[in-house]
Amino acid sequence: MDQSHEQINSKHTIEPHVLMFPIPFQGPVNCFLKLAELLCLSGIHVTFLNIEHIHRSLLRHTQVLSRFSRYPNFRFETIPDGVEHETPVSVDRFLEVMAGVDAVTKPLFREMMISGRLSWKSERPVTVMIPDAYFSFAVDIAKEASVPVICFETVSPCCLWTSYLNLPTLIEAGDVPFKGWFSSSSTSL
Image (cartoon, rainbow, N blue to C red; front, side, top):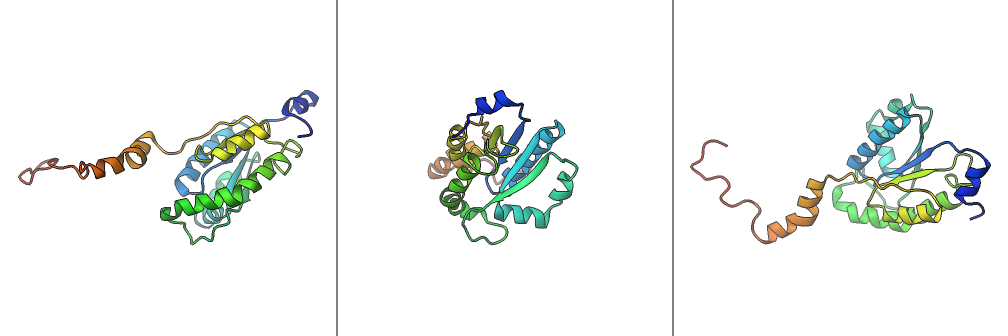
């Protein structure tokens, strides 16, 4: 790296510029868009980095451009994931999409942040990165680029506990579906 974050800041003041990078599924993207809007209302520059397929879907099926057109401090950027997609991508293909992100998006993202259009060498460098907590590679890249990082988790604790951590165990033990929860003679809930 030619110049560190501190060297650039000592020369002139850089306006805050947040890079937001959600996983490419509608629920997390919606959460990130809400946070992006709050940051824009605060006057902070926001770059919203989307995987190309979710961005096309957003443009086709929402009013996202008109919603954010009132914020001159907001812009979209896209990056490929290398996976052929139907529209929309089903959740069944989550692992395939994440493998594509790892193989294709990760090196492109690194280049963007280290020497490309979002680096300290650019006209408006990123000063803080907010990736989805699932993108652990983004933390490594942020460290390499000397950019502070705040991971944003879009999955609720309840969903995480039941769906990912505990539900398979409960099914395996025969506890779900709940046995004896409703009796056949019960008429009220």
